[in-house]
Image 1 (tube, helix red, strand yellow):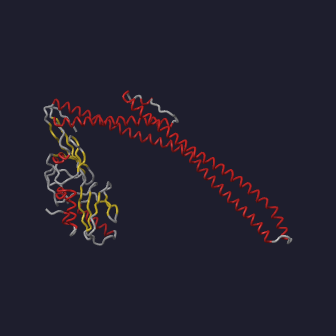
Image 2 (cartoon, helix red, strand yellow):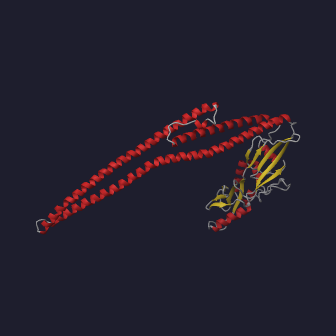
Length: 435
């Protein structure tokens, strides 16, 4: 079967591209690029077909301009369903088959007058990963590969966790759950102490009140509480010192600028007196000039001197207005210091409330998982050891609708699938899911 990339690449560059792909992706990459990957799906029909697969969020594509010798461009489909095309920018491809994607991209380059008759090839480099959840050793996300079945997917996740062979793993999981619970409890207590510190700061108190913490703590938490209180008390002291320093700087600046305003006002008063003193002198000089006893140039010089004094007065008044505006800004900054401080505390309290709710939900989930693990161990001790494994696949459709399908070991797994593995103990008249 011919490989799609080989059919579409240029002379000379083809072998280099194929060598690179083989080095990175290995044998599975070669199988992946086959025109049609045959495997049985949930309905017993040929399953995954690259030609029919629709581009989805998380896929990685390869865009190659066949008419030049430049390297191909690797494109990643973002959360908005778009890729970043060279010279075009964001372009939505999600939901389109790969053949249609080639046509749409080519048409876009023509419509935007970038290329006249583009010869391009678009192929898949990597499809979005699938995930395996439930009763497996290593649940999580895994890279998709061609011909993937439920059985091989479970193998990639470390195999099933069931029966006596899984007791060691289950014990390790229990220890991890207990460790997670301790971390969540410590985080909840940390937020509680932080909230008490924020409330104390908002109310102008200098110490943290632990009265409200008595209901959620016990003696075992006291050492941690003491450490947290000491830490947050240090935060309070440092914040107060910083705030006082900032207020002091602004207050000193206001005081200095007020002194400057007073000096400028004194200069303006002196300038007004000086200008007023020229009145009699100008009147006398004008009389002397009219009688021919003073040269006209001397009288003109006196008028220029008076004009210079009035210009100096205008300059002083302009400086005074600017200085007053500056002082107004400092006064506003002094008021904003306290406002921003209180606002930051209130916002931190609101964020802590959201985080505390999330932590509490996480704590309840961990407790449920611990209880399920206890029940599982008890059941395993009383059962005859018979276990039925159930497989469920959650699959996103073209319109983002999610379909839940029952599966068997030989059914195919598609890109983006969520495979849920559920082990059910065979107990007479009863069953227990360890999911």
